[in-house]
Image (cartoon, rainbow, N blue to C red; front, top):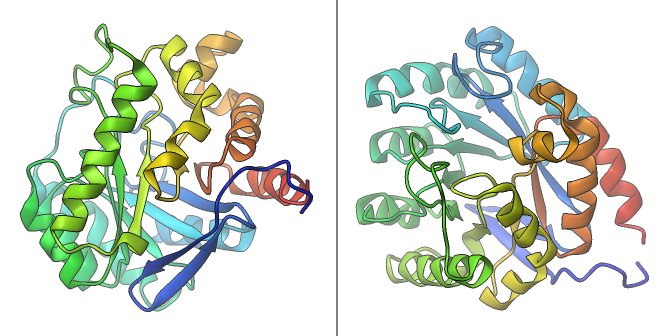
Length: 284
């Protein structure tokens, strides 16, 4: 590697497993078992279909699998704990002995995260960055699991209604730095924390672009960086493309920019094209 990339190296720990970050871009495949997610909602409600999709993404080069049982798209409404568990646990049970890559669960609920960790998940992807949920932080620490701390302004139902910042990048930096400190205070290992600036979660198109252009600024927090750019609406707005599944080229373009700007993990819907992209960029 000749040095065009600026990402630092980390040993990211998930229980007894270690992902070496920085030399090779890692991919987190998205598996939504929901009826209303913005991109693949309704496709994988059947646990058998979800299992097949998960194994397909593993074969295509995913390094992690992120299962979500509650849509957090703009304007979405929360679901009950019972319903989220009903969607997620059957898929986890099917995959626990079949899939080789670590499983993440995308949730903010203690009960869902706790059940997922007990079922073998090794990572909790929390869009609320554990805000006010010290019980969940303690559970993650006790399980020696890992966590994604993401920035979001507001809540999914209202987050895209006129989001505003004094200084977008600095405000998000300060939030994530504080979130990492709080996670460490709760006992979560420094080596088990990923940070995510939260593209599309309470940001305008211009604010998303500003974050992308300044992504390397977040390296100052000292934690590896995950980004979720795949099929996001700001890409559609920039390219005048309405449907999420028509945003692949824009997703790849922003992914390339993110890798060069220091991203360690890409959260993606289309694993194979992102793997091919990353394989080439990782050699630059």
